[in-house]
Image 1 (spheres, rainbow, N blue to C red):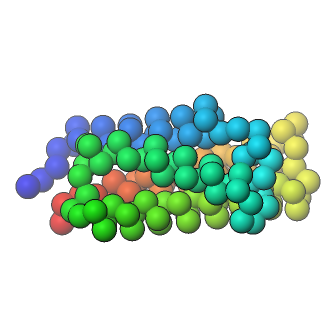
Image 2 (image 1 turned 90 degrees about the vertical axis):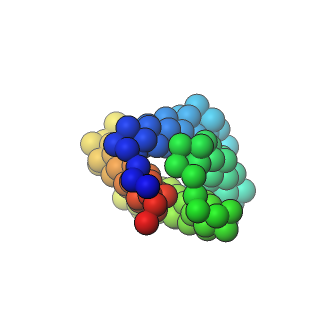
Length: 128
């Protein structure tokens, strides 16, 4: 059965709002300051928050199985973690600060990559 454009747009909306909630409302200073330390609980907790906040999209587009849902969430967790870690490594390595344009270019790229991740998640949830 085909999925309507409205359903796809609703799923994308859910994921974009969840990203704002997880990255800007629920992310703590502890998480921000430790995402660049590989394996640090702050970064792990931040990505776990993202995964939990992704769950409502399954109400809009149901995964074909619990195993598929778990795999999708695990993939999001690992990918999100590494995107955030890499951004922090680049910020530190280059010495970027919020008063520098490069900081904002990199932040924008980070947000774009996360948004494109949601396009992939929705695509993977579409019936086949």
